[in-house]
Amino acid sequence: MTGNLQAIGFLITWVLGWGIGASLIDAGLIHAGVYSLETGQLGTATTFVLWTVLWGSGGVWLYRYWTKPSAG
Image (cartoon, rainbow, N blue to C red; front, side, top):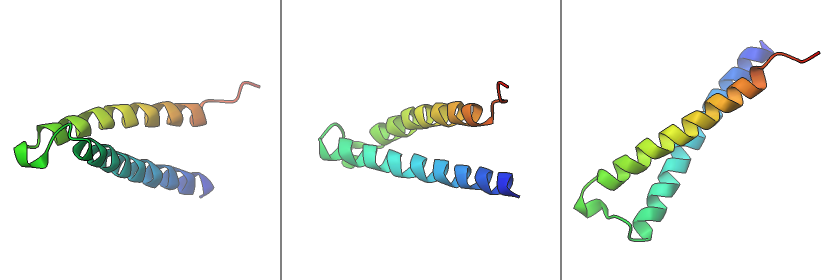
């Protein structure tokens, strides 16, 4: 059961990090004037895609790191 709880905790943490991180990046770029919500959603979509690829790659790496077999 502990393994299942760890997996659920990892998944919840990953989803929260993905959503919060993307929102903070998007808000920062809008505040900095890189793009505006009034001119369309292309900037938000680009942020979403790039953050998803980055955060997803990090999640896969971390999962493989934590689940690799012991070396001894």
